[in-house]
Amino acid sequence: MTLTSPEKKHFPVMLDEVIQTCLHNNKKKLIIDCTFGGGGYSKELLKFSNIKVIALDRDASAVNRAKNLEKNFPNKFTFYNEKFSNLDKVIRKENEPDIIIFDLGLSSFQLQDYSRGFSFKASEKIDMQMGLSKISAEDVINKLDEKSLKLIIKILGEEQEAGKIAKNIIKARAVKKIDSVTELVRIIEASKKRNYNKKINVCTKTFQALRIFVNKETTELIEGIIKATKLIKSGGKIIVISFHSIEDRIVKFYFTNYSQNKSKPSRYLPEEDTEQTVLFQSYRNHLLKPSVEEIQENPPSRSARLRVAVRNENNFIIPEELKFKFKRYLELENTNV
Ligand SMILES: C[S@@+](CC[C@H](N)C(=O)[O-])C[C@H]1O[C@@H](n2cnc3c(N)ncnc32)[C@H](O)[C@@H]1O
Image (cartoon, rainbow, N blue to C red; front, side):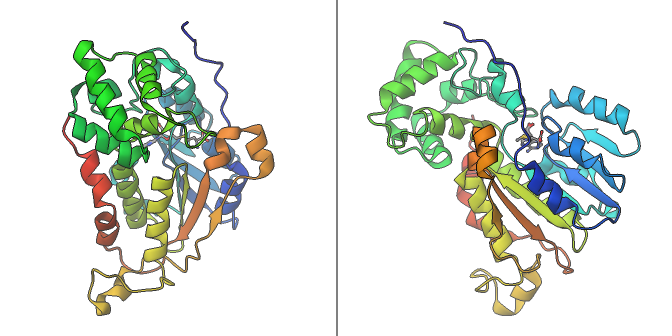
């Protein structure tokens, strides 16, 4: 049976918390919404007369949604179809952004459009490109060698049975190209002996791994938050909402280790240099989660984690330790297909 995409409904995650963080005073502000999606945050922020918004999204399908806002707020809103790893191509230091927001992952528009192959409920092509991506998930599962496939599923999906799934993908594609989500779902279901976490579907982790790999999401995140740190004004805030443990680990490490109150100096730098590596004011692992009411209304919000860091006055330095610490992900995402 072919399922058609459900009616698309979009809930901006932790909207109140994001707006409160942006509105700490009434001064004029430039806010960069790096992940426009359905425009949930941008629309709400533009209601305030002291706020201008520049938004980005890598997905071409966001362009039309953004056009309406550009029409309604010609002097307050601009949109770019661009990846946030290229933030410095569209925002200049002289723009002095006050707040830069990253709401990571997929929008409900992407997830619920079954033709894009992000959902394991779909039967269409296994595409999974968010936009401005160079490869599709179909390329990955039909072209990569078994060892690389296993590593991707194991490391980016944190899937314990990655070896079995990779082996069965190789076996299946030797008979016939795997070209639909339905076929991939069948292979994963047959490979998984047990579902260790009953709360999530057996396919979730493999799908997460493929999506992260296709869109180089950890590379994007690391490059994006580094560029945001370089561009934002002193006293400005970087807000990140993450949805899985790899993303949250990266953000937590960065905000903690490059803040004034970090507990220990960097292991990779001589001690006298560590003072200059501080990029943020005190960061006390300030973590917000969605309210019980929000989770009830919009269950996918349950895994959201919101972190905020405030830029200090130090000159920018490239945070090499961040790249070093997560080198494994960066190298893996660079695997040639
Ligand atoms: C969770 S949605 C954002 C929803 C939005 N905050 C709202 O309220 O409507 C994430 C969006 O970020 C976009 N995105 C993900 N990674 C990106 C990247 N590296 N550069 C630019 N946009 C990205 C996706 O295409 C998606 O539209």
